[in-house]
Amino acid sequence: MDLPPKVICEKPALPTLWLDTSVIIKLTKIARSEALQRVEVERLTRLRALIEELTSAEKLLCPQADQEEEYVAQRLDKEVHGDFLVLSLGIRLRHRQGVFDYQVQVAMKAYVQKAQEINLPADMFFHGDPADQLQRARERSFVIGTNPFRDDELIARPSSSEVGSTEAVGRIAPRVRSSEENLRAAIAERRTRLRRCPHTEGSRI
Image 1: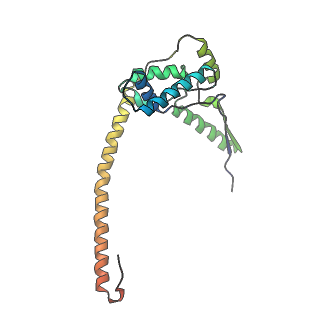
Image 2: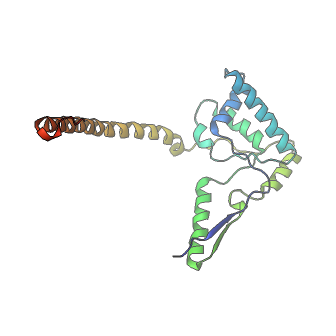
Image 3: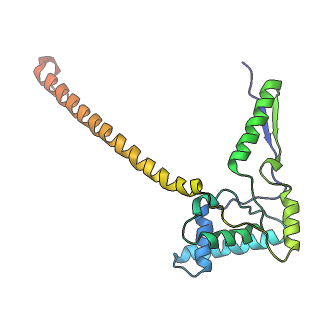
């Protein structure tokens, strides 16, 4: 049996921090003195200070990625986008679909060539050299970025997902109830048979 090829994924030149969308939103709320739990305020304030310290020292990357898809057209979306732009210093990851397509292309080429190794370079995740981008960003007195991408399809996607989930639950619920009823009926029938059978005294269901 042929062994699968060994996959070697190159790490970025600098440690890279992915911020969850909820963290970014809470950082923005803290900056605007909105009410959050005290422990959240303390931890996230320290996190923000640490990110700013390490990115300024060129020891950490905190790039933007696809988080925008989760906060666009929501409350504080422009503020969240601006705060994240400052933390990331304008450095972005490629969109996940672009990364996926690149990996598929490399894997297909390796399959055709029957390669023993698949090498995935770090630059498949970024637009250019992120370490160089970080250095140049620190030399500027301003951050370069764009406004939130307000695509109609992108904005409609979360709400359609919620509707789809509700519809799915509506379709599944009758089946669950039907299965429960069938199970109860089967148990009742089994008990009736056991009571009628003289050789199964003492049996339990």
